[in-house]
Length: 93
Image (tube, rainbow, N blue to C red):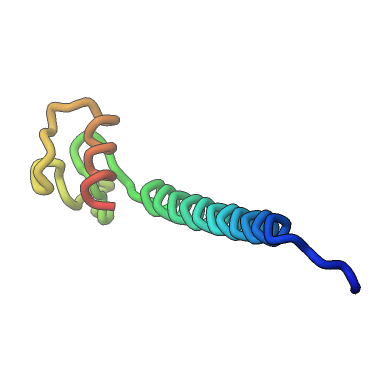
């Protein structure tokens, strides 16, 4: 090409390349985190829960649910449902 570069120009170019690499790596990390969060949310949303059961495995012929109660997984059943569900999500998902 016939052009010579100074040490300063070479150094700036190397810094720009490294900054670009870091930026691309950060993008990859954010994409992975979003995928993981989405997966965890979808797994959590598939759980059937109510005030009595933290996990409803199924229903009897009469329609009564059966599964794991909040007490069986160590969560106080007297807590509001949202708090119980969040504790279960944090501890078991």
